[in-house]
Length: 231
Image (cartoon, rainbow, N blue to C red):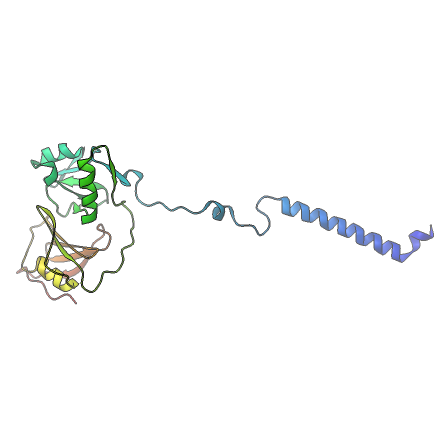
């Protein structure tokens, strides 16, 4: 019984029990899901952000589009049927984005339909020439546009599509070349491009957009259709 009275034996036994208890707690903590300093589940699987509608990612030439006739929505129709309703050939039908950002077609670009950017028109024409192929088109969601150079390409949109004006120009020169002295009637619009920016002339003002969907006023237009210099 003297061994139980020895303080050294008692202290050694207590330390052993404390160590055993600590090991048990450590095993329980490390085996619990989500415990410890490991990476969170979201970082293991990666974070994926998708913008726009799934059906706007690719365009089949036979897929129905939102069709506008005389500025009025006529339903979702195949490209050929929409062109027929508008009394134009399929190749002459304007295809772009409506105010909601959805792909749409119309007999004439205007305030209700913004023409697709030139590179998107090329992709669409490729899809039309090969009906079984699908081509990438801009999604109806946010996009990142690089700042344009001080002098960038200036394009005008007309019945034959996009046409480049002579030589690079700064923003003010492009706006003057496109719209100075030109007025549009209410409900109509005229379009141009400066670098990666879309320019739009509506009654009383010129607007600019970096995503081809959301426009802001760039400069007000005088009643005589003249435009002040754009700095």
